Length: 454
Ligand code: UD1
Ligand code: CA
Image (cartoon, rainbow, N blue to C red):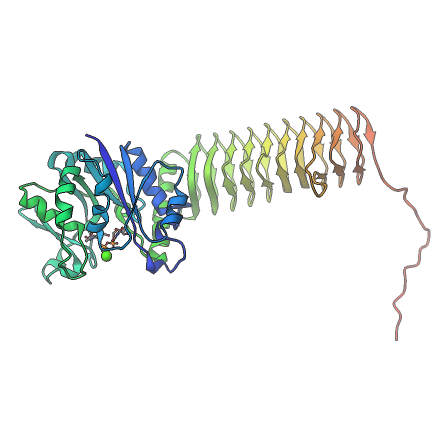
């Protein structure tokens, strides 16, 4: 049976007190709606229909690379009305999973279970038992069978004692949605068209309502304000940290670890506290990451050790490299095996060959550096003339003296040496020594100026 995913995302999210639509607020670096879309895609749904309202063009723009059918709900008249506006594009057959754009953590396995039980009955929901069920729609059962969902505002005192709640995640036959939704009324405490009223319609049609509970409670937590957003962020991070530890990662403190994207790991990777990982990253066997590093879209091969407070953005790092503390690898930094990058060294759009070292204070930009070369402390590649960028090429086994300015375009040969303090503006041939420095002047017995006393 073909599956459609319907995502409700028209709510304004007033309680966020933000100019950004609620479903675009980030959780673990990805918009709330992005999490739901990613999960929907894993289910190989035939189509994904998203209902937008407030700030709709921003939401559509953010996901315009995705294959999504957008349906506008101009007025937010309730969850039932929201699904009703999809009817013109909803297939006549098959089944629909109905999700909320502000419930980001629901897992594929939970939705798959819901699909399995609902395929049998034609309607199913995800429920949850909560100690404090205030505010939620309550699940009313008789002899164990679901009889109704009663909204908090419409519930009797007795019904309000019920701890089993409606999570707002449903799976319903499309034929039935076409039949039922036009019949919804808004005769209730909130004057809204309740999607939950389809339960009564299913019972009237002699159907049984299937239900499942999520494996983990945080899967069905919705976001209304920034307090809930921050709380769910920590729960989601704890969940990801646990998964990494189960894969064998040594997280020194899982409560001080943030993954905003995907990380794939080898064995015995060790990550110290307050590390932030973004985008797509991979760490090979025995990689060690020191405290406070921020690593984005970077691949680090086996045996590499990164010391604290180093920053990576779109870099590729080889085996057994040593980096930091306080190093910065910017886009296009490519380090071969056994390279050493020390403190306050910035590398951008530069490849560094095997075993080469830049251990202290340097800027290496738009350069190609060979193997086993040494870049002295304070070396700067002057790559920018105010209009264009130029290349610096350094051969193998070169020795760049301390505090050199290498004015690009410039080429320094294999085995070449440059003297400390030089401004190198001309190419240096293989095995040549080049230095550029004013002659030192020495004045004997020099008297410094004296302070004038008034
Ligand atoms: C709904 C359920 C309630 C359940 C709760 C779980 C109904 C009538 N009630 O309540 O049983 O316990 O979710 O959180 O369905 N939305 C639209 N258009 C609208 C109204 C809502 O797109 O006109 C979207 C919202 O953006 C949100 C979702 O639907 O993503 C749920 O709406 P919300 O107002 O939070 O539902 P509740 O009234 O809290
Ligand atoms: Ca509501």
